[in-house]
Picture 1 (cartoon, rainbow, N blue to C red):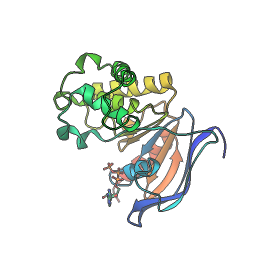
Picture 2 (cartoon, helix red, strand yellow; picture 1 turned 90 degrees about the vertical axis):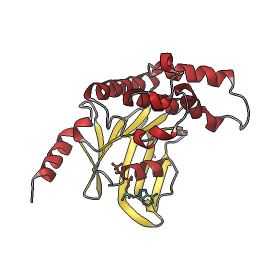
Picture 3 (cartoon, rainbow, N blue to C red; picture 1 turned 60 degrees about the vertical axis):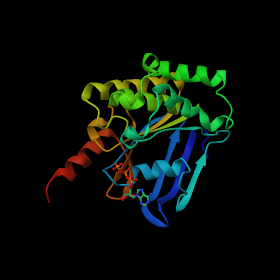
Length: 233
Ligand SMILES: Nc1ncnc2c1ncn2[C@@H]1O[C@H](COP(=O)(O)OP(=O)(O)OP(=O)(O)O)[C@@H](O)[C@H]1O
């Protein structure tokens, strides 16, 4: 495998309990690349993320990593699913990101505490760390979920619809934050969206799920395909 590629999907089929949702998925991500996974509601974007994260196995095909490359995934799930079930402060939510690497029932280490502080600082939420997660605005919640993912010390960040449901200004700020983190931490990033106008104009790689097929395309190609889909038949 090309050493520049950190993740390669080859002839992958995804789905649940043997029922295929999408097949013939073929693409690679280079180290430090920023890719958008775009497609309509219910087409299988989150399922593809779950497969890449090994939460569910692929029905067919392989997911390979570059030579000498071990991916450490940070996952930012859809915010709407978490809003009401989190009776924790912002800081406690970020701390959860460290749990996968700490020993059970041990008090939080100083290293983890300072990691949490750094992640809160990096997303601009240090001052609100004692506020309840449930009482934060949509944009602030998104920042905390990004900080929680950063606290897992990732080299690959997967973001599921990070700007859906935010107002235009908050969307702009979250995209700026993600872009800044991408550069500063040299992360490989994959971001899901189902709205074409949520794709930043500077994104070069777009993985498009279109009519049950996974294709790579430029933003211009994706926009023209979306327009064709909007024409009534
Ligand atoms: N745990 C599950 N078991 C069986 N089917 C599921 C499960 N989770 C999702 N599905 C189905 O898989 C299909 C793809 O869902 P998925 O959540 O991956 O789509 P999506 O593109 O991320 O949608 P959205 O944009 O609405 O988040 C849907 O038909 C959904 O009902």
